[in-house]
Length: 334
Image 1 (cartoon, rainbow, N blue to C red):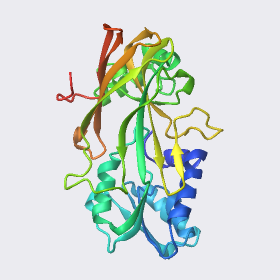
Image 2: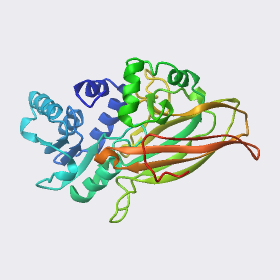
Image 3: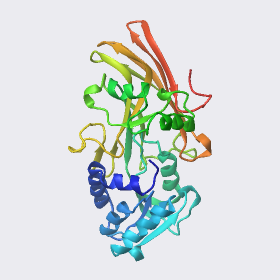
Image 4: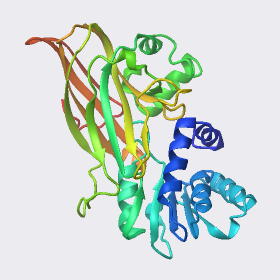
């Protein structure tokens, strides 16, 4: 699905996402604030900021059609004179004033899927007044090895159920430069009951924390992780997800598997990083891996290549190895 109105409507129907962000925006925005909404989409965060008393909201979005929808909806709500739409990449735009608060919802289920750390670093430096507020405040990304045999089985047959059939799935693999079905990440809700170990912290990003220096937050990285298997099962890959502190008292956690119970998100889902060969593991076995990210794929500010490679060990014996990446990056660890 592209980033058109259909996806935005899916996000608007996501109860976990909407409830958390509405509470956080209502808590963080003060009457008279100047607000920047990065990736404003159809304008729901901007609307909540204006309802909280913001003097004005600058809404930036790359999609001009969706941005026009936001302006129309906010005008219908009586905020036409307080919402200023700006079309384009935030890197290429300027604001006539500094904002008191920058709000954004540009996280992917792996946190930085949408290059959010670079975008928010730039926004903090160029758009936020000294002492201003970033929302979210903190984002943690986790990986955990899982048994997800149903999801994995779809990759050995005609492809995922929502891929449109074998031909469409083959075309998707070719378009993404993936050498096989196991060299993509997939958006799917993976049950907590499939976790084979405790999760490992992959990345922590604090948009409102200490400055990271002139280079900003690294957007290319290699992170080694080690997991000790806590129960017998079949290891089929890794589940990725994030938790976030949006404001002083509002947290967001998509790690669960109950949409109706608001323990996970129907729009974010989880990230599934498969391995080609499922491996039966036992309690006490270890899975050692390195997760890698390389930015700037295909010259796009939103492009990245992910890699996950490692080995499964039983005692000192290597049971199997795996190595996958979502693109042709040549500098990933071996």
